[in-house]
Image (cartoon, rainbow, N blue to C red; front, side, top):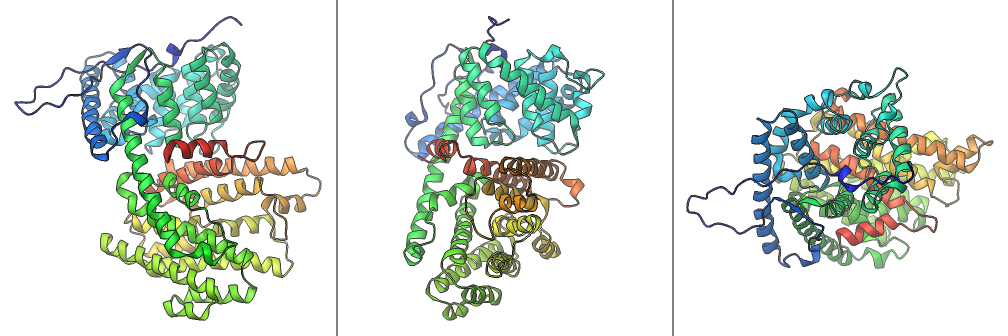
Length: 565
């Protein structure tokens, strides 16, 4: 057994050969590469070799989109006459499109394929078919339950059959869905243990490219990792296979390059705004991490049509970090109280009564927030400024609570600290701005959203606070969740407290999955872009706080090089 080597071919999902080129009725024909499968291991040109101008890239992207569209149509036609294999082929293509983050170009074909084949494969296919169908159905909001899909792959004791322990493709897909637990899904807990154990033990017997892919999948599980980051790794793996769909790969590269140029432009605009604002010079103790603030927003909220929203939300994120520093490092309790009262008044003239740097910050917050409210009114016909200023007041009250604990020598309960930490994370404030930007009809529910933060917002907030505190070394009475939990449980070691916190993070992920995949059960409905942003925010936390043994952030460094530079 030790000599057995698993080949990359085991992971190769089927992709159709090219459809014949359609006659254009005399119109000018565009030269493009065939979307056919191309044997051989030659690498595609790197993204640095793509056309330099946005116009050229966009023109190339349009041609490649047509190529891939023809392939998908050809698959659909063939599936109508195929017996069983057609559905598997179409779902494999949908999976590739999603993993490469280019499925948004083919929404009709993706929807058609899913409607036609998901139920059939989820309840009648092999392990790979069933788990892939389960993942796609759950991502699309179908109420599909793991026990119903996975039961036929387990024995009388609900353990997975050893017959699947060498099924690398099936195990990888099983590993993917194991992170989509909505709580109380014991079969997904067993799926994670079974797939992790068998994939890990198989790595040393796999050929190198497949071994790297499996290791990367275990280290950065699909559902809880950044989609753009995973897309680049998936593309790199596809480029090593002997059978490839060149058009799909080149489309992913062109889309990636176009987004990269857009993100670079957005970051430059934000840097200019920040320099012109002058707060970095006026408040030397405050953080000056514009790039980091932008990356949070860039990751959470994607799509070329939302460029202006990303820029404005980055400004809100910037103010959250600056306010945190002012409250911690550059103000007295009396000054903080005056600042909070001014925010609640929401009057531009109130800035004149505040100390220098606070007055400047107040004017900037007031101007940017009112600008966003005016933009929402122009685009959606409603001005949300009354709700937005209440959200700012809630954030400032949260900061005041923290500083009052410190000034009164009060040690809060860990639960109280975490509850307040949800507010001071700034996530509820930013997501309320986003809701209005997306045109969501919050209406009379707006006040409740501010006062009773729904799980789709509180879960990423708690994940953020807990991850931050796991690696937090700061001291003081406001401390961190870990310090407070150890004080409440004096017999525990620091490692046990961290294990408890990781358990809380896992629970928050389960609740977030429930909100995003089973949203109708929560009694609220949010736009798809909003729930996706909530998932992405939670995914980004591990990147921002995933320190290695030397307190470095290797994934973040890799991510920045990949997406911005």
